[in-house]
Image 1 (cartoon, rainbow, N blue to C red):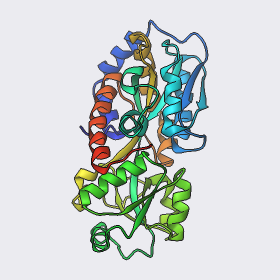
Image 2: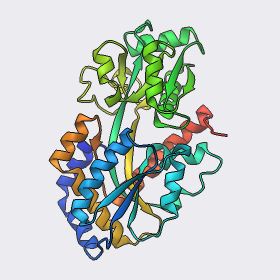
Image 3: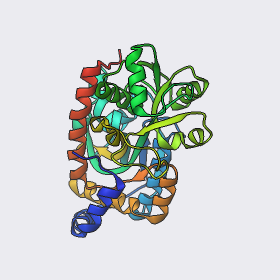
Length: 328
């Protein structure tokens, strides 16, 4: 299944306005009766947190109640996810779920404390965030093919950094390794910032990281971009070819965030919340702000999101098993 991105999905939504109208009509019988919460399962300041706050503000305008964003980080997002899973199923507590929390953590952790497939209800895709493969300038590779050849010539000698075990920067890198047939050692960090600092210092040789976190360092020559991981070139790095353009379409990967509710939330509430998120992600000011930050707003129906998550679980489950990723 193709990744849900703002350009493709928004085009579909605009071409089928009746679908959105129907969702709004179904949800019109439900309205929030008090201020709401949106749980971000990571610390404040990261891309998930920034995107959640932008979207929550716009959704609040549609719903007529404020949405307070709360950060509950820990255990790869599991703590925040469990908080929403155990909340009353009344539509007043939302989660900004991410790729790892909703697809890979179930395979990586022995116990998450809840089952995201049963205890959370899809509402709407919120955003997608393409990544880029970058290397230290000292690495003797100006293209992806040259890097793959270099890695194959010295298996296990080079290393890459990620924002942590099971994070999208980890699983996407493992997908790339499997597709390219290379052996590059994983060095996990607590967040992408520390990994980026070590990449710039030359302590690690490679990273897959969200594009927004790299543009300044790429422009200044402190790191070199080899490939964009999304389905198409990104507007912030138009000169960087995709993995597919360079012969590795099977390594295409996009991280994303989705609005989720507590499992068992009534259908009218889900429909209204989904319509509010879809409207929020079509706001021109929101689109401009999020795209400037390297994040693409991406609204969807609850049904579209459910199908997408199911496909992503299957895809990343294979990667986790083949790469033997686990957290003790």
